[in-house]
Length: 246
Image (cartoon, rainbow, N blue to C red; front, side, top):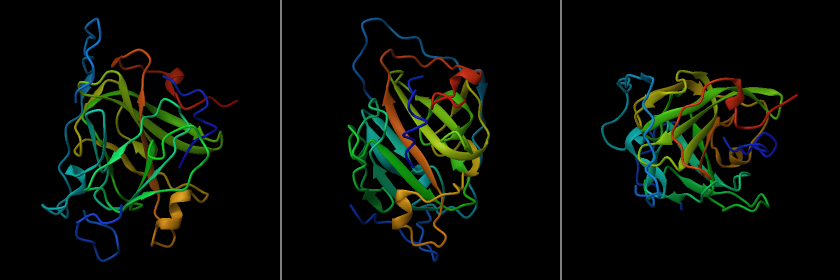
């Protein structure tokens, strides 16, 4: 799901080799050194890594399986039950093109949205409606909170500064029941970010590839490049970073 409206002020291959479940879902660094050293943000709270569900298989576990990477940052699937990963054009020109991993669950590249961004600069990860959403990367939560998608639909977001890459931000949208706050340290595939994905009240481009009816919801994810590297957490209402309404 791409947010052409709410992103307006944003600054601050088929086949996966995994074993399908009965419902069709799969049950499942190094940047250039800056001239001046950049201090690493110290977390204000350590979020204890929660145990994985007992039903998670030892092999083919998407919570430890990479679906894409970019500039040394490896992104793991954010949920246990993933149906597919739909890549598409981001609306933020600072979003980087993602390289799909061989272990991505049913990767698709969706039709052009006629934007000046790469065809894989964002990803919609289709997950079971009741799936818990876990961190796709280890790092520090820079921003997290609630906003209104297209100034209308309640939604939540989280922005993570990945370990060792203060010049990048990993952004997630369409999550509900937020469980983290700015300054928290999270671990890839383990730390609970949100209780479930947001079920949007309208159709999305990725729905056409879903075999479920109604189509399962998706978590939107992208990696953006900062003009000035910083891993410093920021709290408060001014940190929505996906556009302001009103």
